[in-house]
Every structure is written in C-alpha cells, then in structure tokens.
Length: 325
Image 1 (cartoon, rainbow, N blue to C red):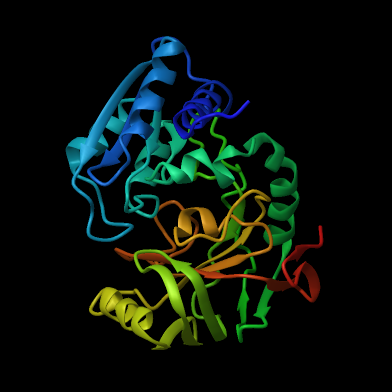
Image 2 (cartoon, rainbow, N blue to C red; image 1 turned 45 degrees about the horizontal axis):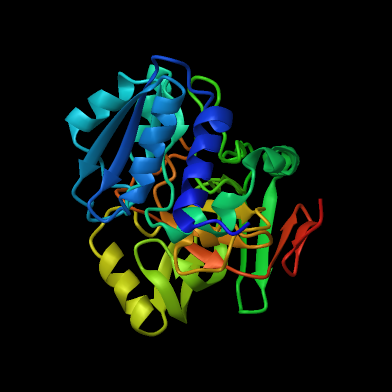
C-alpha cells in the first residue's frame, strides 16, 4: 500500500520517540526548530511525544547565521531542564555549547537532523537505526584503536592525519536511550577529531558541504600542519572562503567521519549525504564542545568525499566506497 510523505514522517517520529529515545510518561521533550524547518516535522514529533504521555515543548528560533553558532541562553536553559532534546534546525547546533551542556545535565537526544520534509519521508531517515548499531560499534573500535588515517579518492583527495589516542564518537547511530547520550540524525556515521596539527595533503569536496549546500564544482583544500592553507574551485569555493573569512580557527581540520547508512542519498543536504555508506566527510573548524578535540571555533563545516578509500594503519576500512569490516 502506498503511503504519503506525511504518513512516513509520522512513522519515523513514532519510531524515534518509542525506540530511539524510549520517552517515558511525563518526560519533557524539547523540540528545536527554526523558521526554515518544515512544519510537518515538529508536528509529527509533537504528536508522537503526546502519544506516549510525554510533554512536548516546541521552540522556534530564527535561523542561526552559521552551523555551530550558540543558541540563546533561554533556549539552553529549557534544554537542560528537560529529559530529551531534538533539534531539526536549518543550521546545526551540534558543534556548539548545546552538546556539553546537555551532557552535563544528563539530557539525551539528537542535536542535528534534516530540517525539510524530504529528509524525513525518504532516504536515510527511513532506515531503522538499530540495524546500524553493530557495524557502528565495530568501526568505532577500529578508529579508536588506530594511530594513522589515510583518505584517498579518485577525485584527487589524498590526506593523512594522526588519530592516535582519539576516541571515536557518533557511533550511537542515531539512538540516545540513556542519559547523557547525544547523537545526530540520520543515524549512520562514526567520526573523530584528528590530532591537531597533523593533517597533511589534499581534500576535494563534492556533492555537499555544511553552509555551502550543494557543491556544483569540486572544492579543493590544500592542508598543511592541520590547517586548510588554500581553498580553490569555482563559485562554491568562493562562497566557502567568504564563510570562513575572519573566523578564528576556521581553517582547522576538525573531523574525519565515515558513512555507513545504506539508505542515505547523495543529496545537496550534507546532513544526509555524509551518512551514505562508503563516503567520508572531513570538517573545517571546531573539534571541541564535547567532541574530543581541543580547537574551539564558531564554525564546523563538513565537506563530503564520495567513493572514498580509507586506510587505518595501512589496513583498508573502506575501499572505493565499499566497507571492508
């Protein structure tokens, strides 16, 4: 039987509230959206929370200027007083003070998710995130135990970095059933912050990038001593240069992430595209704020590398877009 997009969104919301968060009767759930978020998303979550006897609280913000920008104190106060937080804002607050404050308060939840209907009704959000927990756990161990990562691709990417003594995060695969657990939707990545100052090589971003959107022409980064020293390409590269201009620590290589969700689509929204199985994403900017690195920045910008090959200490983890574990 054919279902409508609205019915599929409601089904995802019910699964999330009941299975991913296990919301209890009387528990407060803060739903963060902004004026660019599709109204059907907070409505579906609101209904799902009420259905289990929870207390939904919808907070609508004006869109932040950049992903990683801090939220107003009144909003943060509401989050830390709740049991669960769900963010579906157009600019992600994942790499902001929201994460460490939520963890400190024992709040669980998702700090980044698609803000538009199609990101919920189709693709990666339709996959049951519990099916990702086992491969995510295996990849977490590989990365956490590793010392050196090399990322290459046919598009010209070739970068190495130290990951020694860095614990992989993001392995919760979209599930936050216990206090202090925070994750991102769609489920489907495992990531970590490289050791500062160690990344060397070339990154070629295609398809999508945080705050840039869809990437029509590849963006080339030249990386030396852990910093993006040069950004080259067409109009999208120029837009990225404008975004990072004058922002302290924006050139820092702050993350290496690997996608594992088989239903994720290569779309212009990096929130979903970076979860696609066999892709990598490398970020500029923040690596701190509860993520495990030491660089604080107002920006955290993920750039997608499709059909990637990744070696950890010389062993293949992904080969030409195919997982090897």
